View 1 (cartoon, rainbow, N blue to C red):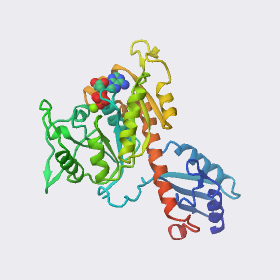
View 2 (cartoon, helix red, strand yellow):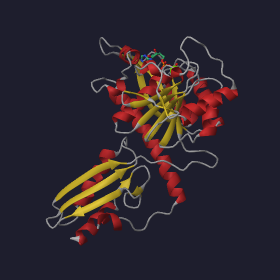
View 3 (cartoon, rainbow, N blue to C red):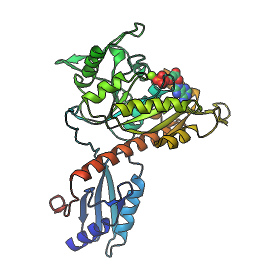
View 4 (cartoon, rainbow, N blue to C red):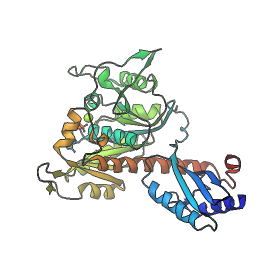
Amino acid sequence: MSQLKDQVLDALRTVQDPDLKRDLVSLNMVKTVEVDGQGNVRVVVELTTPACPLKKKIEDDCRAAIARVPGVANIVVEMGARVTTSAAPEGKNRLPGVKNILAVGSGKGGVGKSTTATNISVALKELGAQVALLDADIYGPNIPGMMGVAGRPKVINKRIIPIESNGVKLMSMGFLVSEDQPVVWRGPMLHGVMKQLLFDVAWGEIDYLVIDTPPGTGDVQLSLSQMVPVNGSVIVTTPQNVALQDVRKGLSMFKKVDIPVLGIVENMSYYLCPACGHRDEVFDHGGGERVAAELGLDFLGGVPLNSEIRRSMDVGRPVAGVKGSDFYAIYREIAQKVAQQLAIRNARAAIDLTPPPTTMLAEETT
Ligand SMILES: Nc1ncnc2c1ncn2[C@@H]1O[C@H](COP(=O)(O)OP(=O)(O)O)[C@@H](O)[C@H]1O
Ligand SMILES: [Mg+2]
C-alpha cells in the first residue's frame, strides 16, 4: 500500500506548475496523498491562490499522472489554496494579517480606476480570497458610493473597524472627510492620515488588500511605499492613442517609489451596445495591448464601455459580484491574472531564499 503511495507521489513529481516550471512536490504543493488497499487514491494539492487561472489544468495534469500508475482504481484530486506572501524588505513593516498589497493607479483621473479597483476586489472575493479595499484617493474618494456604503466606521479599542460590503472590507478617505469639502493635503498630514488608514484599521486576516490610489504627483504612492511593502500595482488606462503618455506617467510614478507594475487594464476598451450587443471599437482596437508591449508590461484585460457597468457602480453592486452579468467573467479573468502575478513573485522570492526541498510529506501523510 505504501508502495502505491510512493508511486503516486513519484507520478506527481512529473506534474509541473506551468508558471514556476517546477514540479508540485518540490514546490511543496502536494499536501496529502492517501491510498487504500483497493487502489483508491486521494490527493490534496494546495495552490498559491484560489484565483489561480491554471487550477483546472493542474488538476487535470495530476489526475492524468496518477492514472498512469498501475493499480490505481479511483482518483480524487482536491484543489485547495493558501495565499502566499513574501517577506517584507528591511525597514518596512508588514501590515499585520495582510498577505499582499495591490495598488491600482492611473496617469490621470476619470479613466475608471476606482471602478477597476472595486471590481478587481470583488472578483478576488468571488474567487474565494479574503479581500479588503482601501480608498486612498484623497482627491475623489468614490469607493463608498461604488460599494453602496456611507457613514462612519466604528472605532473599538482605538482600532477602526472596516465597513464590509459585497464581501469586501472597506476603508476610505471618504469616511473621514465630507464629500463636498475639498481638502488640501500637505506632506506630513498626508503621511499621518495614510498611516492611520493602514495601521489603525482592524483588517483581520486578508489575502489581498487593494488600494485605490489617486492620480497626480505620487504623494500617496510615496507615502504607501515608505510604510508597507506593496507587492504590485495595476495601471488603468483608456484605449486612445494619447493614453500612452498617461500610462508612462503612471508607470514612472510607481517606478519612482519602487512599486512593481504588474500590468495594464484597458478600460472603456470598446463600446458594447446594451440594446443590440454590437461592439464598436470607438478608439480603434488594441491600444492598450500596444502600450503594454511598448512599455514591457503585461496586458491584463480590456473592459468595455457599457452603461450596466456604470449603473452597477452607481447602486453599489459591482458587476464582478453579479454572476449573471456579461462582465463577471471579464473582471474574474483580470483578477486571476493579478493574483497569478503576485503568486509568481512571492514564489520566486521564496525560491531565491530557500533551496528546493529534497524530501517532504513524510510527516503529513503517514
Ligand atoms: N467600463 C465602464 N463602462 C461604463 N462606465 C464606466 C466604466 N468604467 C468607469 N465608468 C464610469 O465612469 C466614471 C468614472 O469612473 P471612475 O472609476 O470613478 O474613474 P477614476 O477613478 O479613474 O476617476 C464613473 O461614473 C464610472 O461609473
Ligand atoms: Mg476614482
